[in-house]
Length: 456
Image (cartoon, rainbow, N blue to C red; front, top):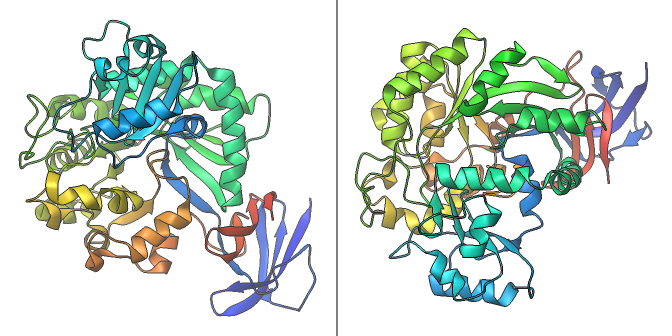
């Protein structure tokens, strides 16, 4: 069994030598001075970082997409498309945000720019804007408007992903290496296509550089149940069964988050946003997951959605998490801890949404992004990016949580944010998931289960 020693690493207030044997930490001792297999020379040491909410295949593919400004209006966005077109070639773009546009965009708006296929994915992934030719790219050739929201958008993104598997897998491998260079050792993959089969395909041909918890959406729940696997079961090296992912409402950026108070400028027929499931449907899904030994990860952004999801967890006793929890009624804050639920938060969203919150949630800004309040009630917090909605970079999430909170009184301390971004401790017998860094965001060494996955 191989051993590895990290020398002179700064752990809290002391310099230590860490000896790794196989996949675990063997010892953590006061430093004996320079040497070791890796000499940290006083650089800081923390447990390996996790991104607890990503759409990894989409994140990887979008890394190759045309980037669009998320704060531009419709005219400026179409100008950006015009300026980035390649003659005759399809264009897949990412990053626009239509929440503050007076009217939803249409296929005709993009048809006026080009006849070549164009498919634009919104910053929050909850809408998809295509011209007439682009609708065929996303498997919706007869869509009446060209602006797909919620389930229609998710289906379109899935279609893009499923028709480009080789391109996606190549991009995923590169994205794994990039994540490891930031100190990431694990992800919770909420990919909208079935993440389990995608990662099994990759694991059959190569070693995975990251630990992956692969989620499943309701439309593939029967397939997951047929596997007979429970939450956390190992499917391949570094690949485990993740939660049943349920999207209970929409998003702030698309004005579809389900809110108690109406939007000042709502989408047609959606004054309060949209609930994607009736209460009975939510309870049924959570009951099926719980009976099969699974957990549930339920997306709830608006305060009305959050209450409905908490009610479903309480009724079914299913374990799991609420994803995003961007707006929470004061009476719901203590319920997370009381029900044993995790709050899975994406702090960079606070930074991205700050400019539009007062316009879209004028009566609810005091309830937005309650990180400190949730922690004060004893809720376990975990942090993520929601990549590609925000960059897959835990250091940015930590910075946003500590120094760029939407309300300063909701900020976390650095140690609290790091604890919410890791899953283990640096102590004998613990997994050798480690990051040595000399500045946040600059990993010198990343180790995953005793294997060096990044060396600067």
